[in-house]
Amino acid sequence: MGTRYLLVLLLVLLVLGFEVQGAHESQQDETTSSALLTQMQESLYSYWGTARSAAEDLYKKAYPTTMDEKIRDIYSKSTAAVSTYAGIFTDQLLSMLKGDS
Image 1 (cartoon, rainbow, N blue to C red):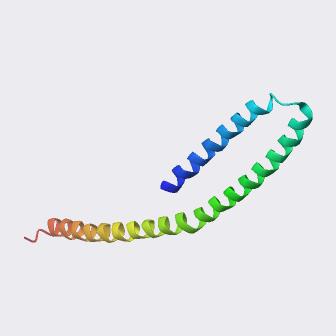
Image 2: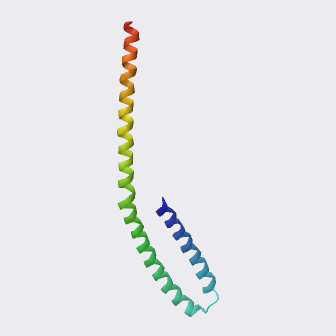
Image 3: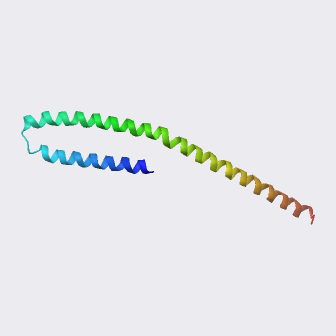
């Protein structure tokens, strides 16, 4: 859960950085602005690709294995409890129907 919040915070800061860069860039000349903009775009796209691949790797390594283990554990415990209580219920029902006390 903490990594998701970190990724969201990173994305918000990245968007805010784009907004700040956009405000500063409009004040400069067109010639220097376009060259600087392309350079910034290339570096930000590179940074974005690196961050995205790192986030995907982190997701693939951490999330599914722990969630699979938790799901399997919950499933095994719940099926054991259901089968136990189903057996008790069946025994009680059969004893009530037969009339054995």
